[in-house]
Image (cartoon, rainbow, N blue to C red; front, side, top):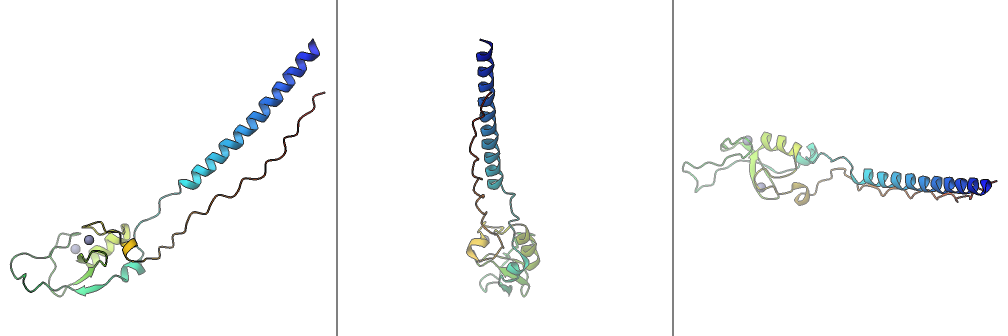
Length: 149
Ligand SMILES: [Zn+2]
Ligand SMILES: [Zn+2]
């Protein structure tokens, strides 16, 4: 009677141990997968070489636009004067002051007016690499059945 109960308790303890070990391994694997997926967000702006590669032109007011309407820089809301250096975004042909759009593009790679993605339209090497797949889990050691004496 007494021996039977002791064996039963020992077997139950073993089963609990194995279940606990499996549970811990499962949780830690899931945790690793979550970490790999939730990598910290990258800075989405353009690098200086990419910004410098954007076309720069001397602003010229269209001939038919000699009235009161002036082209405004959407970043600083200031008017562009003729002959001033401006940048033309290749994605949408919107025009901005060089200083204004440079500062803007360092923070985000979209047009301030129409949100065109400059990274997609203008091939830019941001040095971003694909997240490598997580390493394969180590081979699980054979669960040795503990012999109860
Ligand atoms: Zn401006
Ligand atoms: Zn635009």
